[in-house]
Image (cartoon, rainbow, N blue to C red; front, top):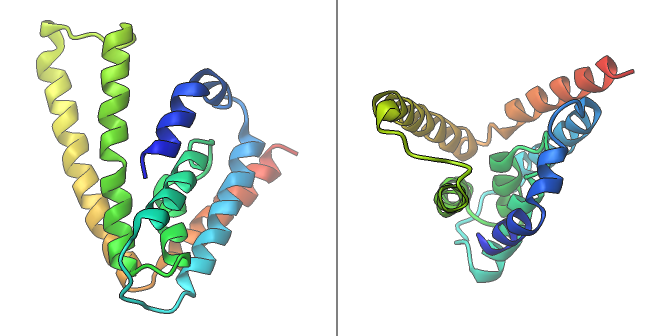
Length: 172
């Protein structure tokens, strides 16, 4: 699942980064795409299927696509997994676990390249920030897994749709 995003991230890092900035219409359009995926996944019938190898690869492709601004990574990967027929709660757990190697890979790459450096003077504030982000991430993951399990993706879909439409209106 990490191979597609890893390859795209390494090969097209600069191009992807250039899309972030004043590209509000792209963000709006991609939020609407995310909303459509979430609406479709919310209507999927419950199953007990587990994520297999090919499903993991396809979900990884959706994770790579989610590098575009406005595409929700968790929304894209969970929706793709559910649309492939996987169990919703397993899809949510898999989505949150599959990003961990990519995060550590990016940190490692940035440390090696010098884009990220360690400074002992900032250790306390960096540790506090890491801890706060970790706790917030656990809370968000737990909440999202409950929403997915209870077939409540439509609420996130409505949010993405409204924000996406507003973003497009603002750019007119």
